Length: 85
Image 1: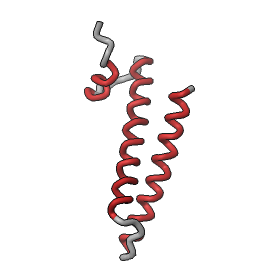
Image 2: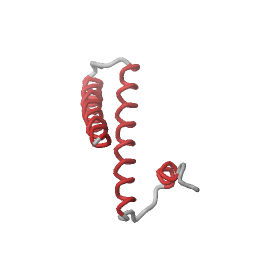
Image 3: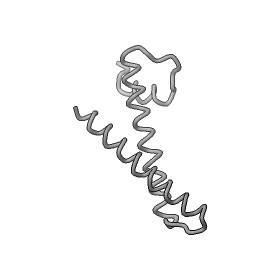
């Protein structure tokens, strides 16, 4: 249950931050930037971080179910941490 709530929150952060980034990009294309660089970088980091979290959770679920065709080394190392003995 907790993982589902956190995943939904990460998805909401991704959607909100993408919306803010898209609005900033549209403003920049018209010559009227809507976000200063600091908040833009925070939104970009939130977007990338939430997508990485969602990719990790989906990969972990698929790996647990035996449906992984291509391994992702970084995710495998994180998932295997603490399960060596």
